[in-house]
Length: 265
Image (cartoon, rainbow, N blue to C red; front, side, top):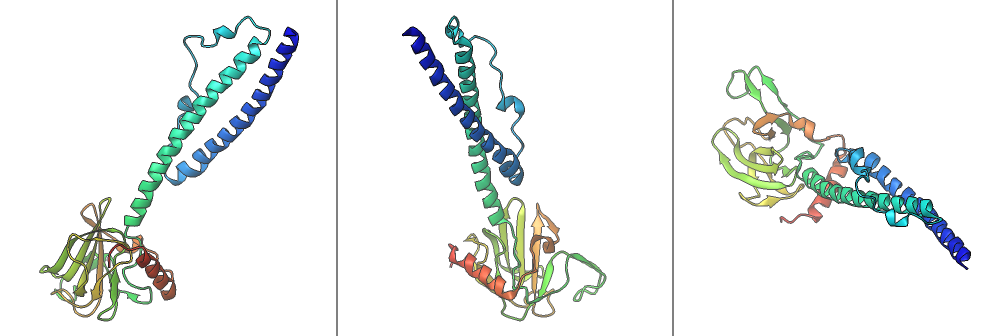
């Protein structure tokens, strides 16, 4: 009877060992997705090998299994169970951190000024460059924005989520203008507007119509939009922040999709 019980225990342990093998393979698959798919995309560091595979030094936690016929089998399975517990705990913490980073990444992407402020059917004017002769001042001067050759009254859209930090008339030459703080050191400026559609301190979403183009301000010689992006207080080339290689229809569909989610009307 004892021999039969021993064989039954050995059989149960063999079943448990197969289940452990299957579980370990599933955990390894999760680990591969973690290290190859999620972390590289989210620009997260890999988990160090020492954390994924800690040692089991110190007190022998399985000494009570010594002295039996199947001691080695029982010890090996219990050791593997402990290893699996650690792998599950590490992987669980990793996925939680990935979920947190994913949410933060989505927030950052939503707030990035990543679309054109007007449709792609309008021509680009002067960009981020030094102009030997300013059209109004007549002297050499750096042009810090990207101009769009748009007719008077063209709709101008917020290029990313953010908060309107300035809205009104600028005496420095921008005329009617709107400034949106997107966070992460990024600020977008929309100048020479004929009409402003958003007050200061309101939160806007990408695709919200914030005003109409015009020719206000002392530095404008005709209807156009001056669009500028500052990064940590310094102007950068706005052309690098959006892809203008889409059709006007695609742009309109995109604006409509953004508008359906907007909290600002």
